[in-house]
Length: 230
Length: 236
Image: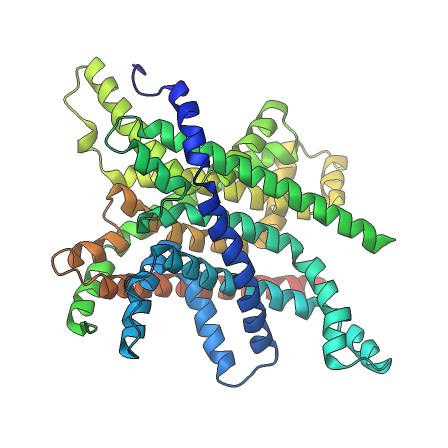
């Protein structure tokens, strides 16, 4: 019955070709993580300092990004951003699709990270800031040397989960025609009846990455906790 | 090209028309997830040998493999194997007769089982060890301990997280469009295939998803308020 349905050898023939597109997947993940962290920090500060207007805008933005599917966001950015920019006379219709994909994941990551950062910054006891001001630190010094390091430690587990979720989310970039690991499955196997092997190959790659990610984050966390206890 | 408001309204109507499909996908997966996930969580908390290991491996697999791959794998194997089995049994039913909603519901259920197993495990462990010991010491069996002492305390803890899972399921149900299952998103998109006004269709779909998830969030807040009020009363 399973004859011809699944051929394990093909998986191994496909794996190197799928891995050759792993850099595209990683590029999306790394860029979106870094830019998203910066954006998330800005949003968190806007929320914490209750900057008028910006605060309300941030609330709506975060709610929208967290309340809609990533695949919808991908296409909204792909169709919507060129449409918006067209009104101010900028034509980006011919830009690489990868740009829109990275922009979407960045915007999405920023919204999720904003909430993580906000919660972490709020969880540092206010006595810490008061003590820092009492010994004469400036506001910036206090944030950089006292508050941020403690908040980062609190945020670390959530940041790990966020990174794992982002990796999973990138599996949808292929719907826009990006040739990353998932896109490569369709590029090399469509038209053949060996799609199944392609998906299994992609599954193996994603599984390996996410297990490695979890182990890595577990180790960093353990190290930092030891340092704190000393 | 401007934003066509009248077509946006058409797409919005289509999206709302197919919202029950999205809700069916999310709620059925939530239900399956709670039933099976609870079983897996209990297996791990009570360290039932084989089942606990199985549960751990299952969670790693489902959390590590993107849901869209799981959905596509299921879709391909189910449609092909179903035909082979049907032929062998001389049935006239073929895979093309099956509603694809079931394939999507199965994929979402697999995902929600893993997520709910993890969050219920956390909730079960959040009930102090002393509660288990006290229950055993007065002669309750494992089952009695679980149903009379532990679960009543663990359920309130897990409710906000279950609401989060429901939001996740509503969002993830949108990937049903890759197997051409007609849900909220696909309903809006099909309306746009004639005139290529995809921006309007995606905006319409996004607003409906947003509305759905905001209502779940509201519900979650109400539940939480009620539950914490109850807890405060217990302390006094």
